[in-house]
Structures are given as C-alpha cells and as structure tokens.
Length: 181
Image 1 (tube, rainbow, N blue to C red):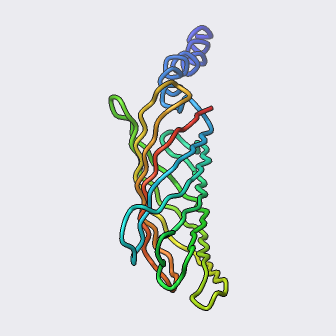
Image 2: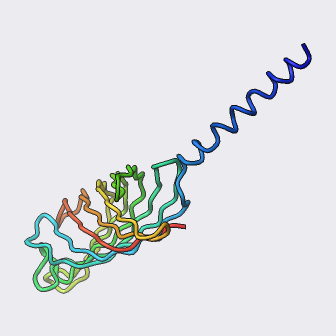
Image 3: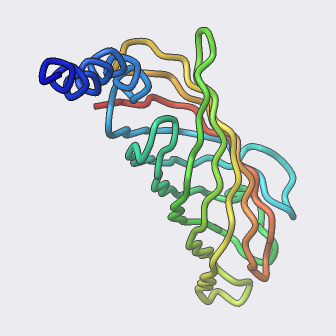
C-alpha cells in the first residue's frame, strides 16, 4: 500500500517530464527583436509612393506567437512638391501595439494593431513653421524570411489613421533586417 502511494506521488512528476519537451517547443527561440527598415510611403492626399523614410522596431515576446512591438520612424512627404499646404513636410511617429504571428513552411507572417503618437511638421506658405501633433491608429501585416535563427529579412505594409488638418490616412511599406536575441 505504501508502495502504491509512492507511485501515485511520482506519477505527476513522470507525466510532467513527458510533457516538458512539448511545452518548451511551443516557446519562441528568442525574447527580443530589433528591426531596421527603409521604405516608401503615401498619404491621402498624396500622389505617389516616392516619399522615403526609415523605421526601427523594438519587440519583446509576451507569449508564444505574441509580441509587444514599439515602432518609431520618420518620413519625408512630397519633398519636390507641397504636401497639402506645407512644404518640406515630415512625419515622425511612435506606435505601440500587439503583433500576432503564424509560422508557415519557409516564412513567418504576422498582423498587428497599434496606438501611436504622430507629429507632422512643415513650412506654411507664409514661411512660418507648422507643427501638428495627434494620436492615431495603425494596422499592418508583416512577413519574415528567416536567414539564420537570429537574423531575418522582413517586409511590412501598414495603414495609419491620424486626425491631422493636412491628411488623415497614411500607407507605409517597409523592408529591412530583423535581429532576434
């Protein structure tokens, strides 16, 4: 009888050892991600995807396939022409949101939703500086091709809604490298 109690006491430990490799396999192979991107952008009103800029992503794994990502960037808007009533317009932004990913055979895809702070700067026709700051919402999709366990090539397409006087909708496309550690 004492022998049976010992066996039942050890049974959860033995079952736990069998389940441990499955639980460990479900976790990410990294905790942090840094991404560096260049891109092309458009806005409404806007006329092309010739606006250039950069973006840096800082991500942390919160659960398996779920990341909290801070994105910050800057883009130049219609440098050769006017952007609405502004010349030399520039958009700076910081967003924070959840990104959910799914692993496929040879790539990883993801979607994200983020809230952000945006600043639109430029020069008015009168020659005075203009600065408009607003909160906004970003929604995007990502796709990553892993090169090594710690390195990948990632592309991202996103849409941003911001309540500015000059424009409300911005579309962005980025490509670059991501580093996992």
